[in-house]
Length: 317
Image (cartoon, rainbow, N blue to C red; front, side, top):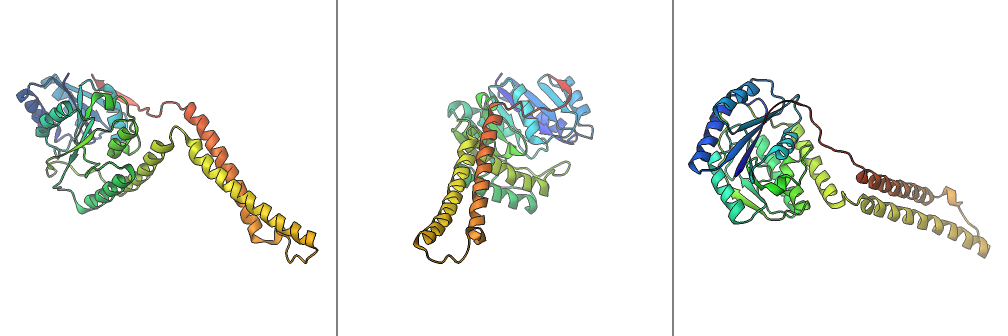
């Protein structure tokens, strides 16, 4: 199969018929073999009924319905596992992404041998409450990851099959998939300017919580990517450093007192009366705790169970 079009959705019943017809038209015109894989993320409207109706009209339609809302990352992770195409295209269900971009994305993945192509919505129709956080995230992600993309959060992306079958997406990490892929060894990442269309149906699902969660997930990706397989290197190094610093301060205080005793000179304060002694004590305790944290983290990483488990209510596969 040439292409899998993955579409996560939440309460998008109005846009689905138009989007599906548009995708099918593009596929027919380019003679692509394809599937359209919808993931209904616990919609409360008639989205699933619309998908069932579309299945009777289009053979390529497949779908998974979550029992409740888990978020876009969960939807993408499940869809990536089910996708069968050699190239996987992800797009939003709100008609703000244009299916006309698919042929060029497919061509570049195959001809330029890229692992990922991320869309860049150079001209956007989003409200300022969404564009400003997006710009901040893009700048921070570029600096931390070293990946020079202008729009990490664009829903329109293309992947080689190997990429989606290797990476794991959870939390709010869908916006950082290029970073996750890079840490997994897929470094051929390109960018393509794509059309951003004004929302025709429904309302945006963006809120303040996504801004906060996205920032926390960025830190999580940076830590996991760098130390996920060797947490002792992070916690252990900090722990040993803190322990040695505290030990050095304690030995210094005791040594000074012993020197005064040896020289029979007056000693103004006992060791336990000095603030530096308690700082040394705290440093030793914190160092020991950090070292133990690294040890426990090593055990957890070696015995971790499956992270992504979601309740699926219905499937059309």
